[in-house]
Structures are given as C-alpha cells and as structure tokens.
Length: 279
Image (cartoon, rainbow, N blue to C red):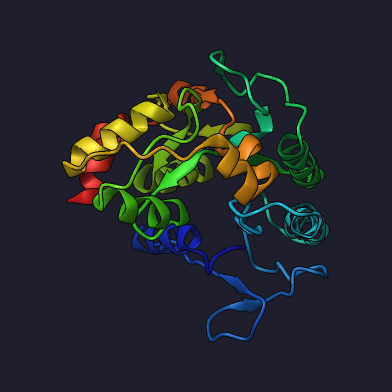
C-alpha cells in the first residue's frame, strides 16, 4: 500500500533487485497491480508480508477537512487491511507511523520506549499503530522522520531554495530535527522485513541535529548563504497547526532498536547524506 508514492517505488525497486516478488496495490486498474480502493477489505491471497505506506501527506496546511483525511487514509485504511489479514496467510506487517508519535520533547533523547505525546499528530500516530496491532501477527510500526531523497516532498521544497541562497532556519531553529537518507530508510524497512523485530522502530539517522545546524550544513554543502529565516508567525499563518506540531516540534529521536539489532547506516551523519544527494 502506498506503492505509487516515491518511497513505495524506491522500496519496490530495491526488493525486486534482491529477487523478491512485489505485488503493488492501486486504487485504479493497472497492469501487474492488485486493485484496492482502501475503503473495503482487500484481497491479500498469496501474500507473505504487507508493507503499508499509505497516508495523506501531513506537510500541508491543517484544516478540519485535512485532519479528517489524515485519519481516514491512515487509521480507517489500516483497519480494513487488518480485516483482510485475518483471512490470509500474511505473517508480517510493516505499517507506517511517524516520529510525531512523541509529540514534542525539547532536548530529551527519545527511544522507542518513550511514551506517546499529547497533541493531534501524536494521537493520530497512536491510533494508527493501535489499528495495525490488531492484526495479531508480527507487526512493525515504522516511526519515520524527515526522509531526504531527491524525489521526496521535503527535498523538493528545500533544495531549490537553498541552491538559490534563499534557505534559512525555521523560526528560532533550536528544535531538533529527526531525518534519514532515503537509502537508509529503504534498507531499514527491508531489515525489519527480514529480521524478527516487532513493535515500534524509529527510522531516523543516529546523528540528531537542530534545525539551525541542518540549515547551516545544507548551505555549506551547496556553498550558498542561508540567512533568510522563516518567521514562526508566518509558518503558523500559512500552515496552521502543522507549523507547531510538525516544523517547530523538537524531537531528538534515537534509532535505538535498529542500532541494537545490528543495522548499519550508510549515511549516519548529515554531511555525508547531503553530499550524496547534492552531488
């Protein structure tokens, strides 16, 4: 689920290179794909594992209408998926979640053992994970940070501005910003598929950075200035609650489960990730 998105495509391509048979799902009829509208119980016959990456993007202005879409495309869809799993031979479920699960925690390091936050995004992630846990099979909740990749939504918004020298910190810039390179995001998902991990797994790089440091590093790699900050009041005006719960939330997240399981990051630090993506 979510196979048509850039992250789903990257995962599918990598799995196919490893010799796995991948059956993507689509709401419309597409050759080689299995059709599912996301509003009914899907046909999961012949499948061993499910990777659910579906969900309305949250990086937009939040309204009551968009919040309903966030819930429907995540929680409701996952509930239908779980019903399908009950009548299938699927033994593993990888279900998207997000670091927004933790709310905002200032400077404290956060591992998978930390409790859920108290804001809307935290509650959304909690409901999403609860829905997936009803599958009663080995389930992994992928608490992902900002994924840096050339076709990604975040990259497409940031990279042109930084190349023009128009980049800058978000608000005060002191908020911790959990990130991960696309290569490591895909590799970590496959690691979760092939291992016996279960429960929440933080999909973030081991090096945490503040937004102001991310900005400085990005500008340095591109050899451009970055002195045009995005004022917090402007972010609030343009994006509503997403400004505070997404862009300004301070989340110093640690990928403890991945590290303890022996997973090795190809891009553990921000500099190497940015140099790869801008080369």
